[in-house]
Structures are given as C-alpha cells and as structure tokens.
Length: 87
Length: 355
Figure 1 (cartoon, chains in turn yellow, orange):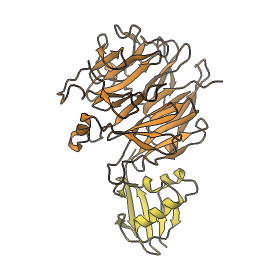
Figure 2 (cartoon, chains in turn green, yellow):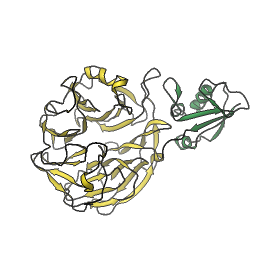
Figure 3 (cartoon, chains in turn purple, brown):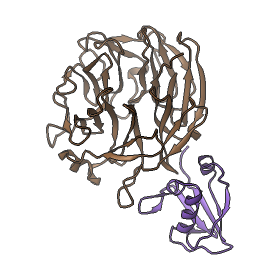
Figure 4 (cartoon, helix red, strand yellow):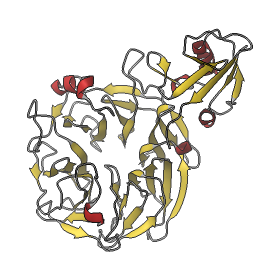
C-alpha cells in the first residue's frame, strides 16, 4: 500500500489522525477518498470543487509533483504539503 | 465576555459585570484566521467563521465556552460544478437557526448548531445578481454577503448586506428580496439606482426595530423605517469613510462610529484614535478620545470590530487591525486598553451570560 505523509496542520482537525498513514489506493484521489471515509470532511480540507487540489496544497508521489489523477502504487510515498503561504 | 476574531485564531476576553479586570484566553480554533466570532445566547454555543489559505473555510463551534472546539465545512459548498467557496465572513444566530454569509455571494444556514450547513439563498430573484456573478466584475478577493441580520422575533424577515451592492430585505423567509438602499449615495456610476451601494456595516437598534444605522464607503446613514429609506448623517464627522458602527442597546438615538481616512491607508486620521458618538440619531456627533492614544496611533478598525454589551450601563468595545482592544463602561467618555498584543483583530462581539 502507498504511504501518505500529511501536513501537521491537518492533525488537530481530525481526532485520531496520524501524520503517516497507509491507504489502499490506485490514485491520489483514491487515497484521499479512503481517508475521507475514516475521517469525514478530510478531503474537503485538501480539495475544492472540480475536484482539484486546493490552491495552497501540493502533492508529491515519490518526490515528483502530482495531481489527483496521478497513479500511486504499493511502496510509493505520497507527500501532502501545505504550500509556502501565510505569515 | 468578548469574542475576538483575529488573524491568528479566536480569543475570549472575560470579566465580571464591573468590566474592570479582564482575562484573555486563546488562541483558539487552531489559530486559523477568524473573520467573525459570535455567541448564540439561546444555546450558549460559540461560533467562529474561519478561512485557511491551506484548508479552506469552516465554521468552528464550542459548546463549553471555548474549552474545546470542533469544526465543520459540511455543506459549505456550491457543489462540484459550482465556484469554490473561499470565505465565510459573517455569522448570525437567531430564532434557533444559524446563518453564514459567504463569498460569491451566498447565504448558508444550519439548523443543527453548526454541525452541517445548507445553501439558503443566493438572492436568485435579484437583477443585481447577474452583475455580482460576473467574474470580470468582481475584485480579486471576490464579493460576499458580509452581513445577515435576521429579525430577532420574526424568522420571515431578514436584511442582508451584499458587498458592493448594498442592503436587501426579505419578509417571506428568503423567497423574494427587495433592495433597501433608497437615499444612499454613490460616487461611482450605478447600473440601477436601486443597488450598487457599498455598505460597510449595517446595525439595527435593539430598542427600536425600525431604527437602523449604516456606515458606508461614502457616508453614515440613518433609517427610521427598517431600511426602506435612508438619510445621510455624515455632517460633523471627520470623514465619510469608515467600517464599523454600533447601536446602543437601550437608546435608539445613540450610535457610535470610528471614521478612518479613505484610500490606501484606512487608518484613523492623523494618528489620533477617536470614537464618535451621536445621541440625537445623527443630527450631531461628539468626538470621544479620553484614554485613547492622541498621536502616533496609525491603526484601523474593521467592520465587525466595534461592539456593545447589553448591561443597563452598556460597555462599548473595539479592536484594532493591529491587535489592541479598548473598552469603555461610561458610554465612551473614557477608555481603557484591555489587551495590547493580540493578532490583528477582525471582529469583536460582546455577550453577557447569566450568573
């Protein structure tokens, strides 16, 4: 199963959510949908209508920039990051 | 209790009825930018409208006076085919229902204490809607419903303030709407004289349902007929521009504003912080400065940044966009700085809880 690393800012929003989670998924969108089943509302904190990733969220699969339809496979690492913004 | 919405979360600033000694709790809501924090005195719950650049818009809620908070964005959407909803900028609780004013613009409501939300209206029957839905007519930050003002006893009646378009009114529970801007001024071309006004803040007197005050982009106005007509009452103020306004809880003729310079600055004139009070429904104004910095105070106060409590001798409070919080318990005659180093303040609400 691919392993996701989530942004720290997400953890306090969903009790029990850990930063590193494994999910059974074939695309980034699948992975987020799987998390949303366990933590309802989580997908909406990373995606907006389209669906597309929120403008200040970035996803990398094995260090390469990815989108929701990017394939993921067992053993791959999926990093979900908050983009540089704020202050 | 004061609920203070800031760029870095919500804060609660609490005192007893003397309102002399204050205690600050926060930041709450995970330090998300909070645009409006309110209390529902009916249920005892607190709510905070927040928008994160990273994670979007949610409304936080607390059932234990801020000890713990939960969030929900469920239903705060225009659907997968609709535009993204980026900010809820106003909250109101009335008649057992919560209302949230959002960008695009639209209004959402919740009947389960903020656990879930449903689209209430986009004022679909209004000719003005065609204009506010044009992407190239909207500023980059997008227009929103910056206030919803339900009638406190009649759920069929509500006034709303659409940013850059003005006030609209329903008396049939939101099925149909009527512009309520007659008598207001605009110094820009109007497509239709019924709408296109830039109302920064609308308040209703708790002492008289028909008495309202509005601070707009160009002037302060009074209405004696529930917003059906407006009379300009700017004369005597140092600027026709400002954001906040507050209506006295017991005297319909008393209101407060904090004028600021227009243009880029939008700070109090000449670094001199002052609150202005009318005691005769806007026929004249008095400048209140005792206890406020008289120089070098280059601060602004935003739309929801001024509030009054409901005690017999009501307190008045305001927060600056640079994080200072001031209070007066003598109708504005003298002021105390009760917090000095909060994050930039977007909203202040005052609530009195029973002992």
